[in-house]
Image 1: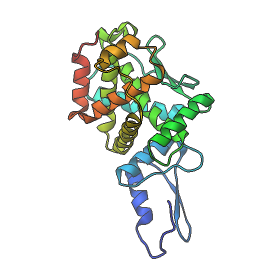
Image 2: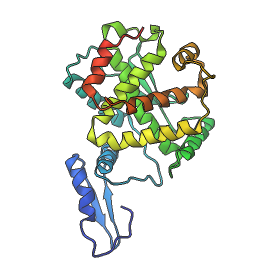
Image 3: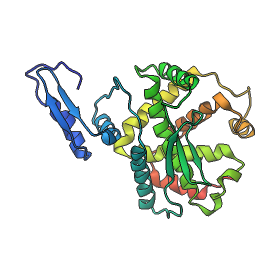
Length: 278
């Protein structure tokens, strides 16, 4: 907790401890003459941050930045599956295996192996890290490239889980054969946004993510030629978009967030079942 606090001030520690208690996060506290330190287990950091932001606190990273572990991602995947099943969707495919390793700046779901590969900051090339630092600067926040990287790919992990969910539908089993990649990606973003927006403890994270993507879009030059359809351009150049690819993903996230039904989880799943993607 960022002090100093006046010695006579009361309720400061309670304002932090209560939301963590309600979220089921165990804590260890140490009090000094001008502030308090609240410690949580590393695997509980995502839940703790979400709970604190949902209760109105601002969380700022200092020193060593937050990283997602395989265990953190597995917990998030279990929450996703539970929400899917609770909404009445039958699961045919086991949750994907999660790998954290060097990939070229993206998270990837492979339907053949049923694996999600999540990028490792430590194994990201220097040029990739420089790009993340530049993006962090463009958000206008006092964050590092690693902090931006962690938040961005936490969202895109849920996006990849949405691709896994698309595999549950008989008509979508052959994801690699789908021609309309734009609709496939837009649909995955609508599901990911609806899932995160429907969870009170994730709302702060989602709002922060959307705000960052919005600032990044404002800082980027629009890749589309004048009068060109975004869907057609994306589909024709899919796999060759390179540095232009994030532009389309960020725009899809904003479109999903601005939808009146953004937090309607049941509607997102209904659209997933009913909307044809060829």
